[in-house]
Image (cartoon, rainbow, N blue to C red; front, side, top):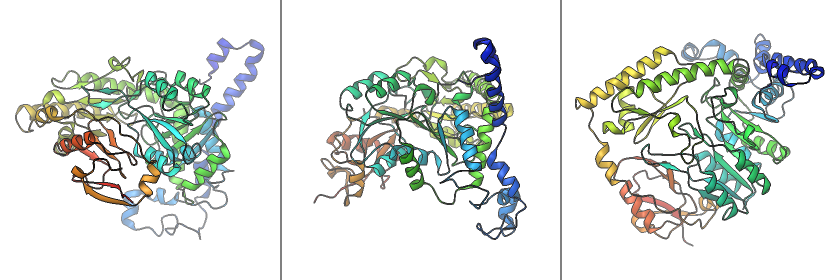
Length: 518
């Protein structure tokens, strides 16, 4: 909880108020600071005989300067004395990370410059040993699979809830997780969850965290899409405030950091800090971008000081969009009505999912139309939907343009300018096959010799690659899993439907890569 003067005055004994108010004031003043940016400003007039070679922009190509700006080159420095060291922070980076920990409710915060993927992989390597078991949802991000491969851990999968109409996975129901932790996952060392989902749905982690901890397990959370949660009461409950031991956040996804800039937050004593520091150093470049770290510093400051007001604005803007979409015949944007469904306790209203299936077209068609005809780029699309992220960087004019573009989309469908590709495809989508048996750990499967064989011949073999299809966006195969006849039959149908296929080297699914039989 963020302590405010008003809260203190109402809830603290009178003789304690003066001291606590002083602490609150000092914390607020500290959050005004941006130590990394201050250090960059102080360094701007130094004559440089060190990397990078562009020397503060004087040696940069004029074309790059004209696009990227002189100031970005001036502030592209390296870890010289006075600028601190991300691997062994003791100056401006340490101060900035400490301020971030304070703002986000962590005991320790790490600035991550290789994306949320790097943050996820760090917390996994800090927690799991080769052969350890981890409970995870089936619809994990590819960075989690990479972390499992690097660690040598063995996953125990839990299926998330799935919304048939919307066509995507929601969260994992608590009941399913608890059953797993009492059954197949009872010996797991950790639970790793994705919360919120890409589409903004989230579950309450509090009771799960308590149960996991009572069983001696660590709770890790891929909270890539939730760095703003702590700064507005209308948003889902943050992972750390719910009892998570570590959370990885993409500060570039919703708040104001540069792409690839992320936070790793850690709380409590269940994760060995020395081991986490070592894992962080294994995975982090020795030449981190100060532009990325400065953007993390500033994004923290902006949220700590102005987050409530900025998010008020974004949430209201998203509400205008959602209401406008739902007034356009043939379109639907879900809202709070999804909360209470299995796997959904909260909704991030800044994520607006626009469902186009009633028009008879795919989300892919809608995305392409908006970009090519209207100059509007959405976040992503799937079979039934386009996903839009509304931030405080958007304007009311942006919302008007998008709504006008969506009306044009509907008109184009009605006038036959867009073919109705969805209906025939919908009738052909088969039911998901059962989760296959995992015969090898993912790490062993990808490190083993492999060969490529035709899909029809793959039954009974062990996959050495991941295969994900959209919908449902849930992997059908992971490395190490035995390919069943049901899986082969499913993939034979899916590959003919021209939906999204991710993961396999052969995107046509004519062949699969399998572990070579010795």
